[in-house]
Image (cartoon, rainbow, N blue to C red):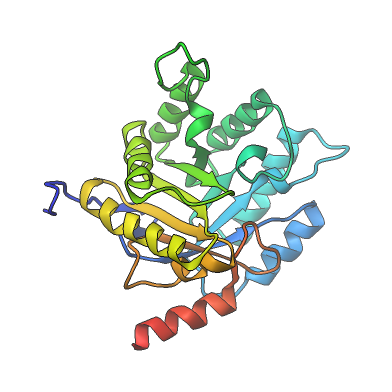
Length: 271
């Protein structure tokens, strides 16, 4: 038991256990075309990674039926990394997505990913799943309630996330966001805020420490931008379950290459 009276419950994605402070490495696929995807997957071979996140929103599918294209791409990823945990993310433009697609298209793509049975987790922005009308009570929409229910029924973990590319909230507000994500059904709660100065990264890591005391699920907490880089490798200061890296192309401001991240994490282990 922890100070807040909560028990932190690790989650397992395939055989990988995620818990507060586990700092597992998730490498991000930001391929634009089928050829790019094949090349990027080949570049992952033999790398020291724990999970793969496929940023589906980066994919262009001209001349292909998008649904058929995504399924074909999923099969290729699974063929090359049969046992590696796979997170699928179709990010909306307002929170860092590559393409500006309407919300129905995004929902349909996410539904396809869940129903494929080929993914292990799906990352969805908290604001995507909630009602938008001011007069309505803040609650999960019927469509996303069904999607989350279907995902959990297939043992697909749900990551609810929040991204702010303009600045960093106060510690209590960041903790509140993580608690809200847990409340609305997250198996893993995530926040990412842009750091304008080094103190912003310190605030975020403090929020991570506090969240570990009040959440019953693990969480991800990252600072974006150059000033937030320390949040991606400071094991002693953060309780993030995951950190992210790229092999070829970054998917977020301040994201490090896999080689650089592994070197910094190794240095942390030595001190």
